[in-house]
Length: 346
View 1 (cartoon, rainbow, N blue to C red):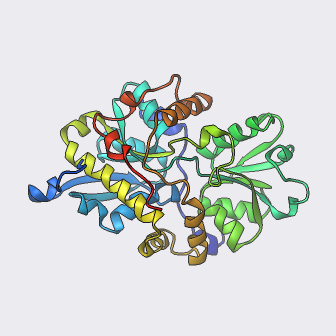
View 2: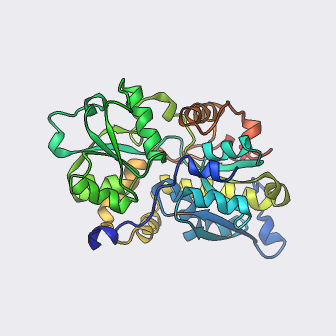
View 3: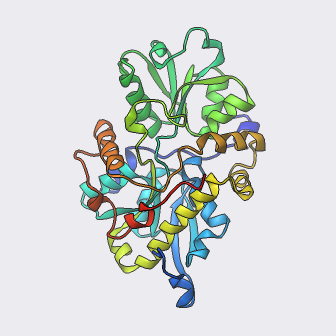
């Protein structure tokens, strides 16, 4: 891998199916942690990614501490590891896809969502510019090679869903190639190993705005159909119900901090870009600024009944879940009130 690209990106997007299979308010109250003395210590498993950005904003800008929670971020190598760290008790909370947490419930572990971070499935299917005259829609991808992080990964499942929604057979009409982490995804796209790529930022922004060799034919970031992805719940902060019950004030502090971090992102607090640059120091600041701007419409702390229904439906397609879930099954009592009256600050 060229060092220029390796220096830009070094983190894997979580494996979509592996996590589940491997695992088998502080509302209007004063800061309870501060009122009682030391802030509650909470370990959160996460990794650097735009889809987990609110967690990093809350940590680096002191929002967790403002809500009485002393957070330690435990950086994992992929989504499977983040889930396993939570299941094993090595951490208290894990950044995870909502569908992963629902799968844990199906396999017998009482895990719940304490906060969500996006209302859309924020990925993009980008194509090399040399195909611009021929490929204008997803349906035009027939016969092409599409890069994904790994077989069975989130990018793979999402690509299959989008292709099928466009009337293509993902098993017959295209070829998938596993191209690994964002760094190797960028290289594979540049060297022609793949003609299209299902990517998570900042990979696609590097290709679009730095290398200037890619354009999207489908964008969850921009709100492209199907509608299922537009009232969704992509990333979450989840924990075991037992831990939540024993540490409710701390768990609510995490949830409230997540909501406040999203407010800072949406208000374009100038410190937010510094957090993103710290996550990806090798990526041009201008590229990261465009990345944040494009993702603003996706960030939301609100989990709706329809969002849970849509995640359940998507999970069934992916083989992750087998049935629909309710809000009561998904969220601990009292937590939905944290975001029920939330309004975007912009």
